[in-house]
Image (cartoon, rainbow, N blue to C red; front, side, top):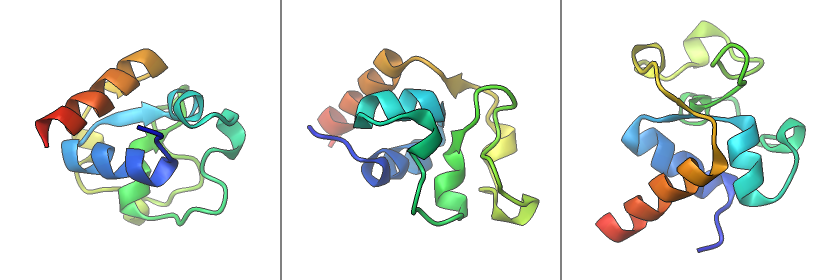
Length: 92
């Protein structure tokens, strides 16, 4: 499948996984700084985070998904992220 940021975010939001900008960027084929360009600041998109602090850049506390801070794990490796996404596809 050809993943885009929105389709990745849908899986992250449903499964409650955090993933770094860099990992998402590698999957969609852009650079980490522009991966979220033009997308809304909303709790659904808050699962894509900066690798240094594990939080989304430019978000206020009220913009974060209510479960974001309860989930400590962050997917940093694009290969691992792709595997998680593909598992979601096969799960239906």
